[in-house]
Picture 1 (cartoon, one colour):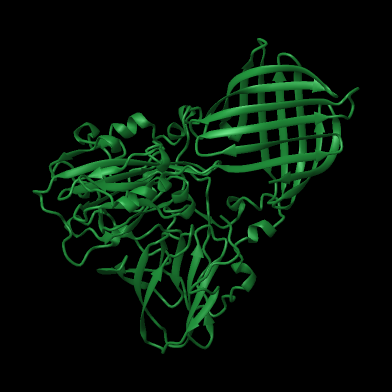
Picture 2 (cartoon, rainbow, N blue to C red):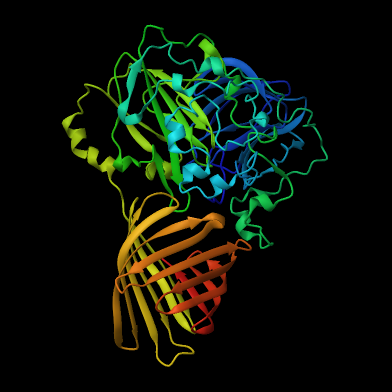
Length: 580
């Protein structure tokens, strides 16, 4: 999501007075809807003394990542003179908020390198590239998840990934026998002895050097950042080639691998006193995969949205252990209402207590909590749009009965909302477009194509389909194809087929029809700049043979673009593309 501004206490920039040598305690709360921030103080390291409101043993960090809804208390010491910047930089480096502490000459925090989004820390193999499922492409298919292959904290997908570069991954025992790890899916949880599975033992963590160690925070020659650089939508105003692609920038670093772009400091967080539970308590282990689709923006736990799900059932008096396996390329701040949970981070009995924890892309995070708050509690990703679009569950204590007044409105929680949108290209040689009505898995579509240039009479086609969404790659559909010329309706065919996303983001559609024929489509859109896109489509129909188009689209406003296009049947034309 692109934002105009990032704010600290409601302002892009604010100031606090402080005396040289004074130590301040800052409570940092990520109250944004969807933005993670890298935090840094220009005056020196931050001493973390609390996480999510609970004290931890002090640990110094020069820069770290805070997730949505997380809280950190840090101590900072003001240097001898000047105003020093505490900066919160959006995770994608699209903008930042500043808090200036002290008075006098300003000392800004250093700039962050932009994320290298295409560096996979390894390489894809052909099996992954041509996998039929998104999870298979990520190297984390269901069968391996169910076998317990990714149950250990920090374990990552992409089997060929170089995990040696990941902080804390060097000494992990990746050879644990998954068959020995008793596990049930969310709908079939079981209670086991507390000693059956020791996640802590598998995670000795190495305390690495601070990400900005050696930086001269007092370099007065560093330019003070301009106000324009705070604008969150600055990428949309850059018209350079591939400017929309952050990874085309020169100064890049890999998230979580390069120390200049660290992840949250969980490996170093250590509770003040032991947080371990009694070995006598039964343990219920619940495996949860975090899945989603960036294109349609639907998000799942165990491949189901909230609207399709059952509750996560636990029992009062036991220890509930959630093993969260992230099979997406996004960070997810998972938040549990009503409880603090232990984050299994290699600190043994001193694992820190938190209410929100980041689950990094392609990795596993394990939490556990004492089931001592009888009731129903919401568990969800704290990215607003992820929560709204399905990445959530109700944690239900067995035996709890909901108040009748609440039970009457509970169905609203599971409502699967419908959304409507459309697009129309109105050109000098033809018009084409679609209207779509959709919820999470059901899609109703009306498409049209009408052409009048270089043909004897106006030709038209209308396609009406119902699609059932299976996953990000695969959708099946059925519908009708209507064709005609001028005022005449020539034919109506029933069609049955599927849509499939091919490698390189090629969108394909295949159908057979009730006249014994078939059709195959390929389409691709490629953004050359934030506003200029190259469009192409090819189609083979057993009745009408080949058809194709190619063109350019220039976005003038979010609701319309200028389009120039060549079509194999209707020649060259230009006009407007209107979006609803």
